Image (cartoon, rainbow, N blue to C red):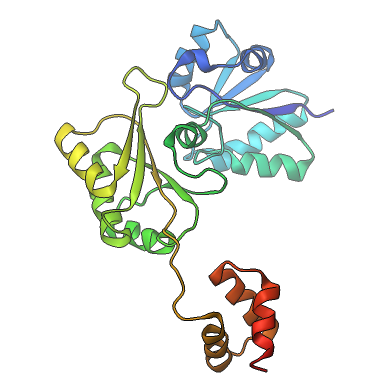
Length: 274
């Protein structure tokens, strides 16, 4: 029988955030695939875990995955860990998981810390839905393209950013989304100098411009303000009928969404125009 691949979350800063289950799994597996073996060795030493280590990162993921699959198919159990947080979330691992699924190898999640979820939980921004865009592009052009895509999102937008690019990114956000757009920035989560900034983009620029920036960052952009549609329901129905090839059913659905009213009410209004 094939072995099992365990996807094990590790602390994002505070070593006490390891779960009992995660420690047990790491002690019991035949091999631990770690993003940076030197970094992970500190965690393993802290919990007296002496399981064998092998590197698995973005630069060797493609050729390392078949090697790990072979070991799993031979019956070995393997734990996949990243430098911090949950593997495969803006971290290497998805290729290995995909190969395991294709080969019928069991994959088990051992959940735990995640910087995204931790930041959302204390941000004070809406959490019923969110859009995670990973690490922001390093160049201004790429960032501006991304912000153009998400500036009207009706949900919280979450991303990672490097401290030395924070001011540039905030300027780009201000230019595309407005300097008065609410934002939260979580810094050094679970660590000694943990901090959460909450305010507008302009206020964030002033605050971090004075204090300087160090440490790991999660940025959270508030949902775009809801824009009230212009004109009446009937006006909008008439305009869409003239300007688009949509069916009446599609027009009614779109107008109901724009005005935030029941579709049945919009349907009644549309009868007068048919």
